[in-house]
Image 1 (tube, one colour):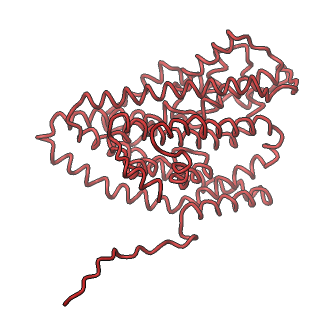
Image 2 (cartoon, rainbow, N blue to C red):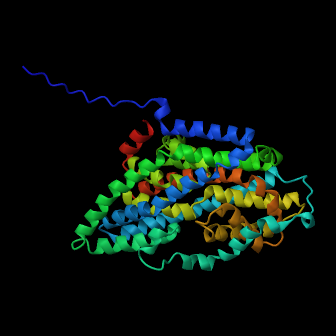
Image 3 (cartoon, rainbow, N blue to C red):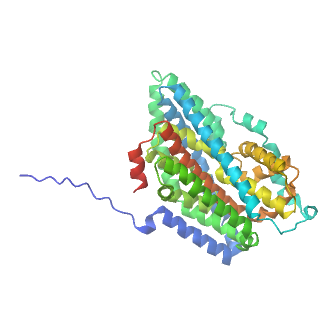
Length: 427
C-alpha cells in the first residue's frame, strides 16, 4: 500500500539578513553614522538616494496605468466606478480636513514657536524664493488643467500621477464598455502586469542602497544639530502625527474591523523605505500590491491609492497648519480666529493645488502663506533647515493614511475579503 504524504511542502524561511526591512534598517543606521562622522562623504552619497527614487518613478506610471485600467475593465457596472471614486473623495475630504484642524489646535495649545522673538524684517527670503515661485505656478486653476495630458499615452513618460490616473480611468472605461470586442486587449494588459510587478520586485532589492545614500546625504548636509535647534517644532509634529495615526486612524481601523498596530506591522517594509528615502512615492508600487494581498479589490486599490497620493495627505496637512502657526508665534504675530479659519480654508485648497510636486509639503506651505499675508512667507526660512527631517514624518503619515483608506473604501463597497485581510495582518 502506497502512503501519500499530505503535508504541505516546507517553505524555506529567509534568514534575517535576507529580509528587506532588516537591510533597510542597517542601511539607514549606516547612512546616519556616515553623514554624522564624515559629512562630506555623506553628502556625496546623494546620487544613490536620487537614483533609487528615479528607478521607482520609472515604474510608477506603468503600475498605476495597468492596475487602474484592468481593474475598471473588470467592472460591469460603470456606476460602481463613480461610487468608489465618490466614497474615496468623501473619505479624503473628511480626514484631510480633520488633519488640518488637528495641526491648528496642537499649534495653538503647544505653541512651539513662542519665545523665539524673531523680527520678520531680519529674515532673508532669498533662500526660499524658488519655493515661492513654484507655489505661484501651482495655482488651483493651473492644477486642474494639468490633470489633462497632451495625449492618451503621454502620461506614461511623465511624472504627473494624476495625468496617469486620468488616462487610465478613461481607457479602463473604454475597455469596460467594449469588453466583448476588447477581450484581447484586456488579456494582454493582464499579462503585462506580471513582468511589470517582477520589475518592481527587482528594483526593491536596491532599496537599502537608496536609503543609505538618502540618509547619508541628509545627515551630512544638515547635521543632527539641525533637529536639536528646532526640536520643539520637530517633536511636536512627530508626536502629533503619531497620535493621529494611532488614535484617529486607529479608531477608523477598529471600526472597520482591523488593528492599526497589525496594519503598521504588515506594511513595515514600506514604512522603512519611506523613512530612508523621505519619499512616499518610493513605496507606492509595493503598497498597492500589499493592499490587494490584504483582500482589497484590485479596482478599489487602483482608484484609491494613486488618487490618495494627491488628495489624502494627512501628514502634509498637519504640517501645514502647525508650521504656519509656528512661524506666526516665532514672529510674535497674533492671529485672530478669522485669520485662522482663512488659513484653514486656504490650506485645504493649496494642499490639492501643489499635489505631486517635488517637495510638495514646503511648496504648499509657501502657497498658503502667500495668500494669508498676516504670516510672513519669509518666516519659512526658520524651518528650511529641518524640513528634510519633517518630510519623512509627512511621507510616513501620508502612506499609512492611504493604506487605511483603501481598506475602508473596499469595505464600504463590499469589495474586501475579510478573511484574507485577517490572514495577511496576522502573518
